[in-house]
Amino acid sequence: MTIDRRALGFGNSDSAIYAADPWTTRGRLYPENSSPTRSDFQRDRDRIVHTTAFRRLKHKTQVFIAQDGDHYRTRLTHTIEVAQIARALARALKLDEDLAEGVALVHDFGHTPFGHTGEDALHEVLLPYGGFDHNAQSLRIVTKLERRYADFDGINLTWESLEGLVKHNGPLLTKDGTGTRGPVPQPILDYCEIHDLQLDTFASLEAQVAAIADDIAYNTHDIDDGLRSGYLTFDMLEDIPFLAGLMAEVRERYPTLEPSRFTHEIMRRQITRMVEDVISVAQERLAEIRPQSADDVRHANRVIATFSEGMAETDRQIKAMLFKRIYRHPDIMRIRSGAAQIVTDLFSAYMANPKEMQSHYWVDHIAGLAEAPKARHVGDYLAGMTDTYAISAHRRLFDQTPDLR
Image (cartoon, rainbow, N blue to C red; front, side, top):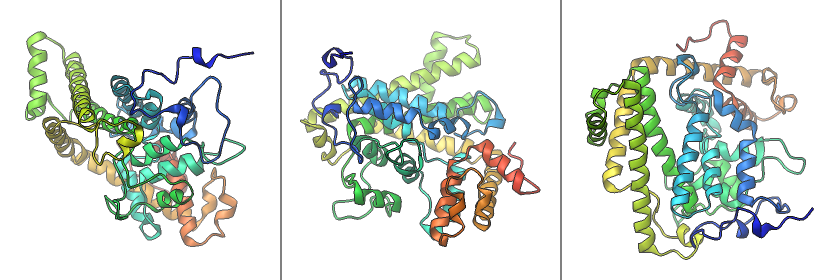
């Protein structure tokens, strides 16, 4: 069988000169032969989708836990929405869509059960051993913890996908080696010793659109879920001029629209305006910088795919409202307290008796490890849990489990 690669629909020759080029990737830590039918960035995206970590996202909290209802976002549905927006931005800017989508799909792999509550609790118990960072955990998953291939641990992603995973929110180090947002998590530093991800530069534009797509997605769907839950009302949205303008626009066109459709009409306009804002800013900055390669983007010393000043202010206002009205609502705080207790209790139980980690592939070896590496294994196990698994594990080990309703 013969395949004409020139006739295939990938490796688009219409991509911009500053886009990441799948034909000139910096490669993988473990060299592999290229595929005759898929670019390396396509293969990365496909490997990400087929991981256990990706499947587990369906039972991990975004904001509202599973018991609250079937229609709220989970980490998986959030991730899919981010990927859709990232791909739209990539297409508009003539980037490699597969790389942008892959970074979007992998960006939340390291999140714990129970959302940021679980992350905070796990970081607290792991502080004596280096703490916990979900971005660093995502890197550990794709380079070490996924056990699928005969030739290597992890899924052996390309340098560009790993760079996007680690640096999609910007450089982690300044040129003099200082952490841009505090100390760089040790797992990232350890990996860069063997596969340098250039932590002092920006990531590709594909990774940048994945990062801003994350903001657009959760700003929108947390409002949607907040309205569905009753923690938000349309009157509360009126306090934000941008949202008030969208609601006025919808009311003028559809004066008798039912609430569920009214909500959707607001949300679709919000996504559209934010996406258009990012495209406009990115085009303006690209015209100023005039990058001639993906590396020029990395060394531009400024983010290219971002909000305008006005939309950035709207972004801050929306986040402040969500924090006040939802994330710090007394009901959510009560649930957060119970979820944190579950994570803390399980950590203590597994540290005392690692054999209770029944499905951990290293369970027979952990008991003999020193305290720090044992704690990291326990952290890996806990971070990989879904909400439902963590609750059932707690019920098996403890007489009383917090009610998360």
